[in-house]
Amino acid sequence: MAAILLDGRAHASRLRDRIARQVTALADGHGIAPGLAVVLVGEDPASQVYVHSKGRLTREVGMRSFQHRLPADTDSHTLLNLIASLNADPDVHGILVQLPLPSHLDAAAIIDAIDPAKDVDGFHVQNAGRLAVGLDAMVPCTPLGCMMILRDHLGSLAGANAVVLGRSNIVGKPMAQLLLAADCTVTTAHSRTRDIADIARQADILVAAIGRPGIVTADWIKPGATVIDVGINRISDDEGKTVLVGDCAPECASVAGAITPVPGGVGPMTIACLLQNTVTACCRIAGIPVPAV
Ligand SMILES: Nc1nc(=O)c2c([nH]1)NC[C@@H]1CN(c3ccc(C(=O)N[C@@H](CCC(=O)O)C(=O)O)cc3)C=[N+]21
Image (tube, rainbow, N blue to C red; front, side, top):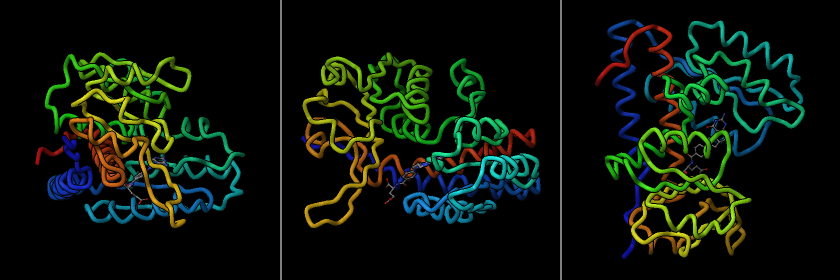
């Protein structure tokens, strides 16, 4: 039996429609327009594409978009000054510094300088800590999007065996925290895990966030499992064209009960959740509830 394809593109589109209604309600009720600032250092082509589409989708839901493109040799002093001015700018409710940064910049120090209330990526240690202890936090966009897809498909996740493949601060760790908060039994597996296929095969919910094309094969999947493929890997196909593939090999779809495609799965949800986090940040800063629309 072929797996159900979990359509992230359609889900993200519905989410953006709701965000647009929230933005309208904030304008009508409070005269506020949420604003998102995106900072890009250097000319990485993939990052340029993401930043462009983030700006377009930000404006499409009626929010204000501020983009700052800095040369690759920007020094940390200049970048920290820009972040300080965005922290102080009342029109900016969300700040995202596109990663990866050029290697001469210390990403941890840059993220640390972002006002945690405006940290719509949820990468600041204050937000990571708040998530870990169950306080209101800005939640990283990719794991947040994965949870929305899972809840939409499964309803309650309580008691499920969840296995997260990957332990990055951006995806693996916050994903494990969110699954734990949703009452799953959570295992985090990684490059040093012994018998990783055996561990993966225990999963009712398998989240693949390794970043290696096709590393998860059909024998890693429990029949009927729900599989979330976070991998965004660019590879050359047989004709030398660049294609986007996930961490899960195509034959996983013949064993899983449901699986997210790449592209069209987690990726579009990530950007929609960035917009949602900007609305959330705006409302928390203004001391008003997120409009129920
Ligand atoms: N501070 C920071 N925050 C991020 O959230 C962040 C970042 N840096 N650096 C880069 C990664 C990557 N990322 C993606 C977002 C959307 C898609 C996406 O929409 N992908 C489409 C396809 C897009 C395509 O064709 O390239 C899809 O999967 O269907 C992919 C990747 C956010 N990132």
